[in-house]
Length: 409
Ligand SMILES: Nc1nc2c(c(=O)[nH]1)N[C@H]1C(S)=C(S)[C@@H](COP(=O)(O)O)O[C@H]1N2
Ligand SMILES: [Mo]
Image 1 (cartoon, rainbow, N blue to C red):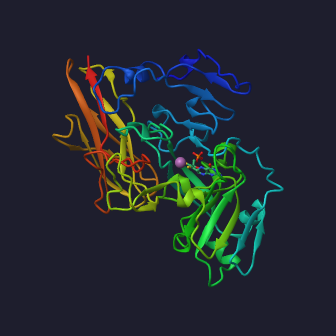
Image 2 (cartoon, rainbow, N blue to C red):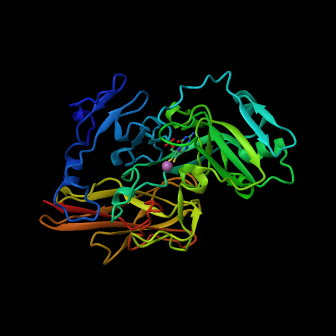
Image 3 (spheres, rainbow, N blue to C red):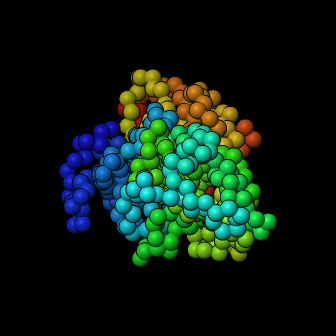
């Protein structure tokens, strides 16, 4: 499905620098709006707007202020690594800071440390071990638009996620170099963006225990290129297996603290009901909440969209992806009859335990028949996806087995 034929822009008023592509995604996406009774059918009359900002392909516009752009599903299809110019964008601030000057940029490490640091990009790249790993960044609100009843917040489809190789240095090594004092308890991360009408200054914290995990990176490269400005140039935190809310962009300030962060983005936002399900009944707020942390197990069919009409009398290869919090995907099962029977899909190459894992399977539809296609991933711990959707007021932790309804014609 091409995005180029969506080029009939309507143009929004404050869009001088941007080329707005004010049309729907094209035939496949239009089918989404249709009559299909799938739980995932988009609310009627909602048109999916594509927008093109500098250094990005046309992406789905979820909001302009703050800037929130979603990757169309077809750009996640059949590529394990999401190209930088297709990678989703989520800011909380109304105004994304200008691109930092790499020569003047410094990362400050201070607070409960014996040896405060001020590190240039060059210091980071040459004074510490450089490592690289593949990891999925998924927004905690990914899939929120499928929650019923509907919840407040950005109505993301499934494209508020992407997979990349991240190159950088271990956070652990930098913190060790600074030498935490005995009082050290947490580490707080702050980027170049500041508070705005859209919200408080964006800061997130991790416990010292999580920081000691050698896979947490201060990353300066993404898919072998410098980070795009909108994805955090020149430096971002990468917390593999954890929701991207922790992956602070344009990171320039790391503070080791002696107490729990009571700032807005830790204490009020990005919290889930503190029970094993992380569920509540609509209208019944959770009495206890916990900060979000690890990703759920998920899989998606990426080669067909809900409501699609497909040709019968042809064998299809269905493609999809699966991921979890880094324990590793062990199996993906596929059903063409709404979960009554399952077949095992073939897993593609494994780029690492935090990465998207591609899978595919053959499917031979019969003309005139309708199919409810499903996929279910199972990780090495035996964790799998839910059969019924969980509900919580934040629209977090989506991990239900998704259904793609298609009709063979
Ligand atoms: N400095 C800064 N970092 C941030 C944010 C932000 O608003 N400011 N948003 C966070 C959230 S909620 C998400 S989902 C990811 C989005 O990363 P991306 O824009 O590279 O896709 O960045 C995280 N890091
Ligand atoms: Mo997010």
